[in-house]
Amino acid sequence: LDETTTLNNGVKMPYFGLGVWKTDNHTAQNSVTEAIKNGYHLIDTAKQYGNQAGVAKGIREGLRQTGGNRKDLFITTKVFNGDAGYDSTLHAFYDTLHELQLSYIDLYLIHWPVDGQYIDTWHALEKLYKDGLIRAIGVSNFDNERLQNLLDHANVTPAVNQMEYNPLNQEKEIHEMARMTGIQLEAWSPLGGGEALNDATINQLAEKYHKSAAQIILRWNYQQDVITIPKSTHKERMIENSQIADFELSNEDVQKIQEMDKKKHSIWYDEFDWHNPTDPNNTPETVEV
Ligand code: A2P
Figure (cartoon, rainbow, N blue to C red):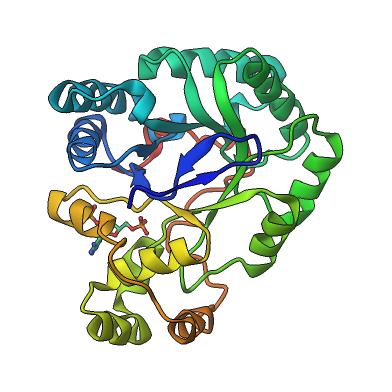
């Protein structure tokens, strides 16, 4: 799916890309290279994943093998909790830029809202954006209350809010707020960490459309105007996930998926105390890969 959406600052962002959470450097390198070779433009990483060096190598190799141009890619990364605050975010950004071996980032997100600090972090992102080092800035995992507080203090409106979003956890209030404020919603773990793939409704639709369960969910994301970044380390699945342009879910079938919402977080969500920047678990080294 090559289609793009236009963010609130005019920058075009692909609707579809590759996530590399829980992927070590070596695997991330291979996944990113394969993705670029198979037509992916959007790659989503984060300092917290501990794999930016691998992503950098994967980008270089993918562009080398395809003869592609950096400008054709859209690279997202994120500032993590331990780096929250104005000066520390600026430092973290330059480290990240160096690690990714890039001269600019397409989209830089606040990974999680660290209470008491996310406004200062945001002002650092605004500076980097104004300095031309980032094409768009946004947030991740912000509920409506924190997003509103950020909007009250922001000079630049976030372009994106990246949330856990899948048929079992649709975050309808957050999606509605995003629509009303012109913020693009983006889904992490769109397959619900794999759980939504086993759902009976999704599998009935897969049979009906002669598509896989993953393709039904990812097509639904697109029809909901949600950018999606499924993770797969398998080439065949990576290709499968990207093949969602050749069919359309009927309104009635979209409605069936809407009704699946259980407001149930995936197994990943409660793994860490994400809001606490001093939690020793909140370091990239302790993320299982
Ligand atoms: P793998 O990396 O082994 O392919 P999410 O992005 O929602 O967190 O889901 C990622 C999980 O879903 C990973 O465990 C990934 O496994 C698996 N996955 C990704 N694409 C597919 C697919 N097309 N079919 C089945 N499982 C998939």
